[in-house]
Image (cartoon, rainbow, N blue to C red; front, side, top):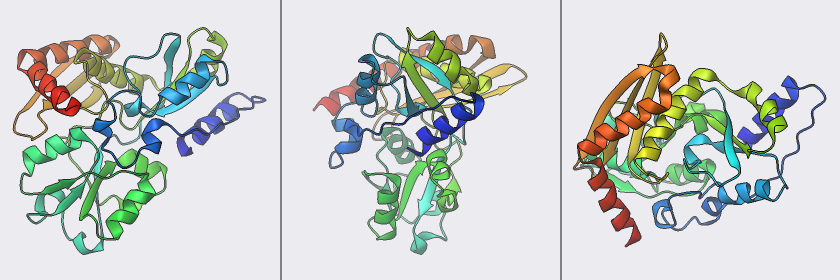
Length: 299
């Protein structure tokens, strides 16, 4: 809702006289809080209900954390706009008794809360001495569980903490050498009906070109690997002097196998760069790792 109200405000500021109304809805990912995300499906957990409202004409746009938006959209819907990205890094959040530690210095057996298989696999790879425990609920609920002592620390998106006013809880920004972030993390994606060019024109004022190029490269990488939101696929991207550099990784759930590589090229060829990187990782065994993960999740 914070993100949606930001988009509402920016659209009304950019288009004087425009009035944007907000309809709140709960999605499947919001409702099922006692089961790990990977066990209840990997695509559309936070988007399907919103998309249905657009397809029947009850809504014009839907605002998503781009990392939650699948790369395959329902027929008739498109990703109409990608906003300027906040810090896409993962963040370490600790309770008071662990404030003296960084991720690298947490004692053996410390309990780390995360609901992301991507974070889990990478952290298991680097820190096999830590204990990882699933955590669900909104950010406030997770922070309450942390402060109550259920966990020694949490791994959350820095962007979400900042947008919600909890930037002061970011104890450490986790470097990309340890944890590549989720595809699209830190950016907002505005989904809309393809057959409404007047709506597309209105929302395009919020598009940020470099963010869009980076995120389209990341999404092409994910799409080519046929991965949903809940798989251990991570990325990092940057643009300098119109050259886009994309780093990607695929890891096994236990963190024992981790394949990582990089591709670069002209920023205007962003989606092609993403596809090339995916092909590179496939040639190194990424497909086999993902196939094993999908089989384990189904079981």
